[in-house]
Length: 84
Image 1 (cartoon, rainbow, N blue to C red):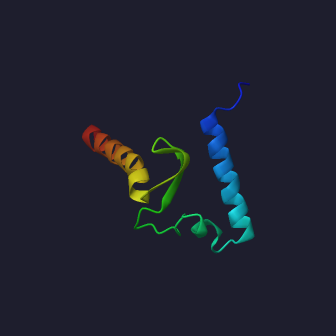
Image 2: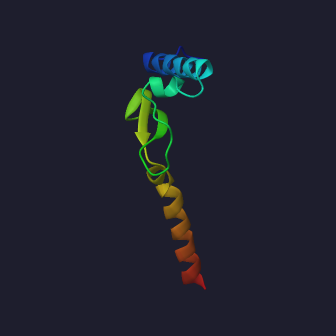
Protein backbone atom coordinates (compact mmCIF):
# COMPACT_ATOMS: atom_id res chain seq x y z
CA UNK A 1 0.00 0.00 0.00
CA UNK A 2 1.46 3.40 -0.95
CA UNK A 3 2.02 6.06 1.67
CA UNK A 4 -0.81 8.57 2.02
CA UNK A 5 -0.49 11.81 0.12
CA UNK A 6 -0.30 15.18 1.83
CA UNK A 7 -3.90 15.85 0.75
CA UNK A 8 -5.07 12.56 2.26
CA UNK A 9 -3.24 13.30 5.51
CA UNK A 10 -4.74 16.79 5.71
CA UNK A 11 -8.26 15.47 5.09
CA UNK A 12 -7.74 12.75 7.69
CA UNK A 13 -6.63 15.33 10.25
CA UNK A 14 -9.63 17.53 9.44
CA UNK A 15 -12.06 14.61 9.87
CA UNK A 16 -10.43 13.53 13.13
CA UNK A 17 -10.68 17.08 14.49
CA UNK A 18 -14.33 17.24 13.46
CA UNK A 19 -15.07 13.96 15.28
CA UNK A 20 -13.33 15.22 18.41
CA UNK A 21 -15.27 18.51 18.27
CA UNK A 22 -18.53 16.61 17.87
CA UNK A 23 -17.70 14.17 20.68
CA UNK A 24 -16.85 17.02 23.06
CA UNK A 25 -19.95 19.04 22.21
CA UNK A 26 -22.60 17.26 20.10
CA UNK A 27 -24.75 20.41 19.93
CA UNK A 28 -22.21 23.07 18.94
CA UNK A 29 -18.87 21.34 18.31
CA UNK A 30 -19.15 21.26 14.54
CA UNK A 31 -20.86 24.65 14.39
CA UNK A 32 -17.86 26.09 16.21
CA UNK A 33 -15.68 24.71 13.39
CA UNK A 34 -17.76 26.59 10.83
CA UNK A 35 -19.97 23.63 9.96
CA UNK A 36 -23.58 24.92 9.88
CA UNK A 37 -26.52 22.89 11.09
CA UNK A 38 -28.10 20.98 8.21
CA UNK A 39 -31.12 22.48 6.50
CA UNK A 40 -32.43 20.79 3.34
CA UNK A 41 -33.37 24.14 1.78
CA UNK A 42 -29.92 25.73 2.02
CA UNK A 43 -26.33 24.90 1.08
CA UNK A 44 -25.52 23.08 4.31
CA UNK A 45 -24.89 19.56 3.00
CA UNK A 46 -21.22 18.92 3.71
CA UNK A 47 -19.04 17.13 1.18
CA UNK A 48 -15.78 15.91 2.66
CA UNK A 49 -12.70 15.98 0.46
CA UNK A 50 -14.52 17.10 -2.67
CA UNK A 51 -12.71 18.53 -5.70
CA UNK A 52 -13.77 21.98 -4.47
CA UNK A 53 -11.94 21.48 -1.15
CA UNK A 54 -9.80 18.35 -1.05
CA UNK A 55 -8.66 18.80 2.54
CA UNK A 56 -11.87 19.92 4.22
CA UNK A 57 -15.50 20.77 3.64
CA UNK A 58 -17.46 22.08 0.73
CA UNK A 59 -21.11 22.94 1.28
CA UNK A 60 -23.82 22.39 -1.28
CA UNK A 61 -27.54 21.82 -1.31
CA UNK A 62 -29.19 18.43 -1.22
CA UNK A 63 -30.92 19.25 -4.51
CA UNK A 64 -27.57 19.56 -6.29
CA UNK A 65 -26.37 16.23 -4.95
CA UNK A 66 -29.68 14.52 -5.74
CA UNK A 67 -29.89 15.95 -9.27
CA UNK A 68 -28.24 12.93 -10.97
CA UNK A 69 -30.68 10.59 -9.21
CA UNK A 70 -33.66 12.67 -10.26
CA UNK A 71 -32.35 12.95 -13.82
CA UNK A 72 -31.79 9.19 -14.07
CA UNK A 73 -35.25 8.48 -12.70
CA UNK A 74 -36.81 10.88 -15.19
CA UNK A 75 -34.81 9.36 -18.04
CA UNK A 76 -35.91 5.81 -17.19
CA UNK A 77 -39.51 6.97 -16.84
CA UNK A 78 -39.36 8.63 -20.27
CA UNK A 79 -37.81 5.54 -21.87
CA UNK A 80 -40.49 3.38 -20.30
CA UNK A 81 -43.22 5.70 -21.62
CA UNK A 82 -41.75 5.60 -25.12
CA UNK A 83 -41.57 1.81 -25.13
CA UNK A 84 -45.21 1.37 -24.18
